[in-house]
Image (cartoon, rainbow, N blue to C red):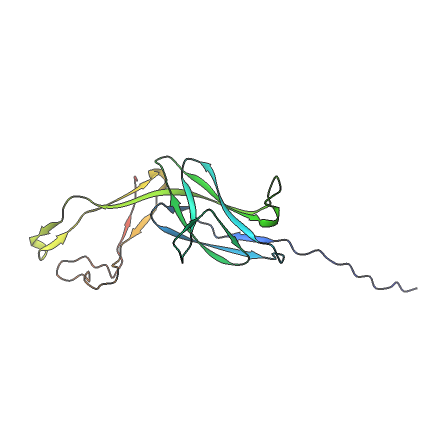
Length: 190
């Protein structure tokens, strides 16, 4: 005797969120983080929020159009989030970027779909001393720049790339530093 065909309906695939790994954001620079959401049910969203693990630093989302800083962002698919660090201190400021399922936010323990740990860095860039005219180098105008990153223990292996913004003066001629090659300087000891 043949049995009738039985159909078993499988449940919806689970929601999946992937946050591109990143290690830090700076207080005076914007960082881009890619987030990918798949299998999200209709009428639901993923809420991106920050959580502090230690220290006093903060981070907020930067809205491109208005320049406003936001505490959370709702997304329904792939998105590039723009993050800025706020009020870092000299201590380590460890944080999480959390992806929460919006429909569970009112529950005692909202569903965390993914989280990425990062550190808020206080990054300052300043001129040290006055510019000096160097006669032996075609009378070049030399300026010393100072870069400070706190917490200093975090910068091992970091590099800073210098480049010109919108002009063609620093081309390596007449004693100038060639910024078309984008010189890179390694940071150490803060």
